[in-house]
Image 1: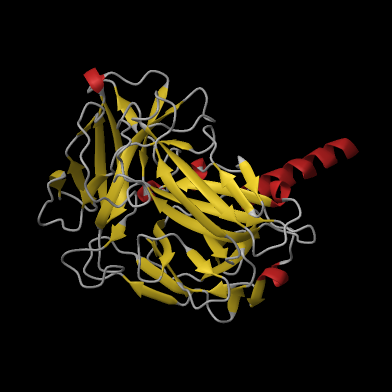
Image 2: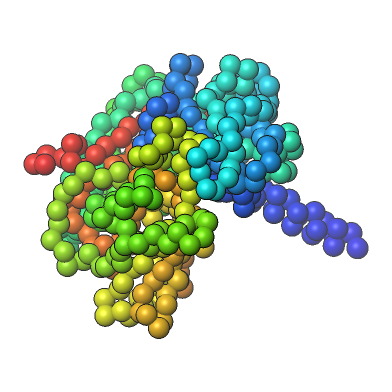
Amino acid sequence: MYNKSLLLIFLLFTVITTFAQRTDVIISPTIHTVKLFQLGNQESMPILRLNSNDRLELHFDDLDENIKNYYYTYQLCNADWQPADLSSFDVIKGFQQQRISEYKVSSMTLNNYIHYEVILPEKNCVPIQSGNYILKVFLDGDTSQLAFTKRMYIVNYQSAVFGHIMSPLDNNLMQSHQKVQFTVDVSQMNIPNPIQQIKVAIAQNYKWDEARTNLQPTFIRGNTLEYDGEGDCIYEAGKEFRPLDVMSYRFMSYQIKDIDKAKVPYTVILHPDGNRIKHQYAFYVDYNGWMDIGSSEAPYRWYQTDYANVLFTYIPDNKDALTGKDVYLVGEMTQNKFDETSKLTYNEQKGIYEKVLFLKQGFYSYKYASKDNRHPEIAASEALTEGNYWETENDYTIFVYYHSYSGRHDELIGLASLNSRTNRSGL
């Protein structure tokens, strides 16, 4: 009986810990269009400088028309997004949780919702450590009633990151992949053992779930760490993101085939997307996966824009299903996650993949990618759906973490963004 009780306690602790570390997830079924970004810039990562006047905007909608009491708090995490060994009182200055008091009832829309927003950090609830954070939003001051979580970052710049994008040395990858080569200068700090105390991660186009982590320097020259590994820092180049303009339901953009207005919410039917592997590469300015909420017919984008069911269709070569593969939609609209919310369903009768997403009016960018359904640990690939071209414009974000011997968490001491066109010679 005693052993069974211990087992039950262990399983319960495991479930709670696992649940607590769910990042960038929407748990409440009524919550939609969660966005967290730098003040005034929807196409930005939620990054703050420590002890600065930087601000973030948080926006989300609740399709339950009843006004609710939403609260938020910050959880400090290490580089691997596990909880830091610090009390919340050592992390947050002021109140440990704060109510979201700003909300507006939707107007001029067919779908009713309550829009909530807040500018972070508020002066009476301020995170005071650098590092990775999980912003948790929950109901009625009860953290067990979690509505959603979002990643955010607070950086205390103590290292300099320099880098550029280049073609891999492997002849088989030169035309299809990109290599990130960079150095980290830690001369401002006294680091006895940089191999153990410095951690580096790289995310391509803000896809943290498939970021390269725990990278080791190829060379250490004094206070400079050089990262030039052929195995760690090589990425599929992919292709430019596909655009989607649903800013109007009256005037259809060229991506929209039809709009079924027989019932609310409307159904927006997009033109089918095909395989782009054999298409010649063409550069155009894209959003690299971001979505920009807004309407061409309403002055207030956050509470006067409507919702619709948007039907995506992907036609594979010869209308044959990809053997052993699942196909996903990639972009901020699916939070760059590979799960059931982004997975397309194969229609055997039509020979196509289909997916319906409930989206707010705005401008979106997206791609299709496939994953091995027998080995989910293998990273997603665009090789079978979009094609890979070395010229593709991609953003890479480099995170540098430091763990002092006397410290109790991984500090974020450096951050840099590289672009494969502006940070690449010859382009």
